[in-house]
Amino acid sequence: MEGYTTLKVKSIKKIEKRKKVYNLSCEPHSYYHANGILNHNCDSKYSWKDGKYVTTQSIVDYIKKEKPNGLIITGGEPLLQSVEIYKLITELPTDLPIEIETNGTIPPLKELMAQTNVSFNVSPKLSNSGNAIEKRINIGILNLFNSTRSIYKFVISNKNDLKEIEAIIKPIAIKPGKIYLMPEGITAAEQAKKQEYVIKFALERGWNFSPRLQVIVWDKKRGV
Image (cartoon, rainbow, N blue to C red):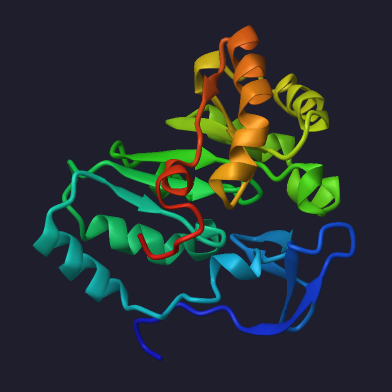
């Protein structure tokens, strides 16, 4: 389909440790290449099951018509489609703030890093995601993002995650103001159980606290 960027999905399988987490097996194997880098696991079923295919041009037309104050590109993993994203950005106003959310396993194109209106929200997967550390953490790539316009967001599932975060950021020397902690939870009640110790941990280190505001307001409702 001309104008569409697709990723074929072969199968979906549950991870036994955390039954809410899904991995995808992408043809022809359970891994795929993006920008010359070998990557594993596409993303959770929740992120794409209600999605739809749209053309790059339809996105451009919509943004030019609606004139938003900013654009957030998320996924899945957006940088799997780096070339198409770059094409999209070059068609948009140069003064439109654009944020690309990424798990930090794929290096951004130099062309993307050169766009002064583009920033990166880097959210490395922790062990609570059910993925092996060699699949989800690449210090070299995380450090590359640190050299450009970026922030780092960590989703907290339990108190053990906090030590893991410190171990990840130590060799990268990320400034405290660039680090955000978010309590995990797809309901307001789930977030509330964790947010007190997450806030405390962030304050003690000069980091930022960032709840999922849409969950607090709309709970599990989608499409808001």
